[in-house]
Image (cartoon, rainbow, N blue to C red; front, side):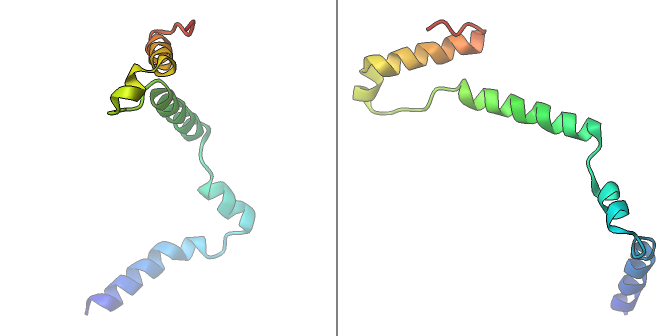
Length: 85
């Protein structure tokens, strides 16, 4: 009972898209400039969040190492906008 109704609805909704050329289909499915900007902004934000977060290290020897301390200082300064370390 439901299957014929679903088929009819799908046919009705897709009928207008069947005659599209490849260029029309591509244009219809393309992202708008606002969508592209939003994606780029979100990507940049997530990238910066990832790069400015120090890894969680449980090993005391690694935490005490000078290179790790310097890296941690650099990451902390980067979150403040100062990358001088």
